[in-house]
Image (cartoon, rainbow, N blue to C red):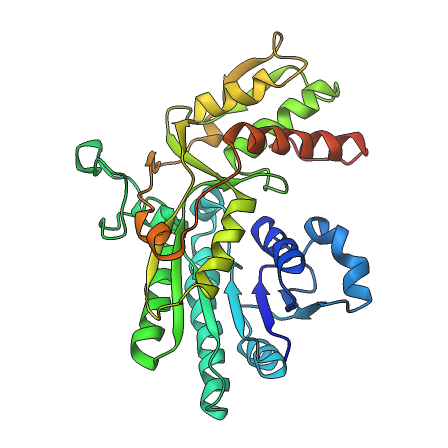
Length: 345
């Protein structure tokens, strides 16, 4: 019988790339959860396939609506569930903390409770569930307390935004359902991951978008930035979704939790310089600090220790940092060349 996978947040960057990966590398039937108002830009290349119901089907549900979640899980009974949907913008969480906490913490609880409800009514149903937390749970680790090998799974949580707090809740709820109810739930703390389809509210993507707009003559040659001193370790989103596939298929252990991340570490300012170096306007671009882009608190030492996950699955990042950044810039160049309009943010 053909396996079924359910992806919440399929219209996001990660969800759409995960769908691409599963369609190409498995025979699974893919069901993507989205809201009726979800933008479909990231899955536009898949809509014809979805219209034909060619191994891809869209399901309408909302993390804030328990009934819709029960209905979808009961209808599909997926073998694998990837819970990626979230209010995922840390900066937005400072101005919308309640929405962030409700969607990410209670939304995760509603989903897991819906799965448990279906499992209780069908004792043979035993799905494998991935709950996506975030490296932001570790927050602002003092430099003197950062382990030499990087942030490992047992480092204490010190969340530095309402988003990060919500992901602490997401992480703990996932583990609770594994321990309390014997559900095969695993949580991940993915560090910075990017590439094509990255939202323009994230630093490297807004840099790339602004550079592409400058090249097209749409804005003056000034890139507006926030904190350029923050340290980040980058992974390519295409490596990230391969890790998520391995998470659920390589000896999944209920209740386990893993740090996952790339291998290239640099300051945000270095990332900006890399992107500018690819630009046809590199000799003309200036940089300007925009106070609105600064966080009240910044998680600024995001260097992961991923040995636990690598030892368990054999996963290693494969896509070089330079290719990730070049592909991200080309993604924005392509969208702008097609005449799309964007907010300057």
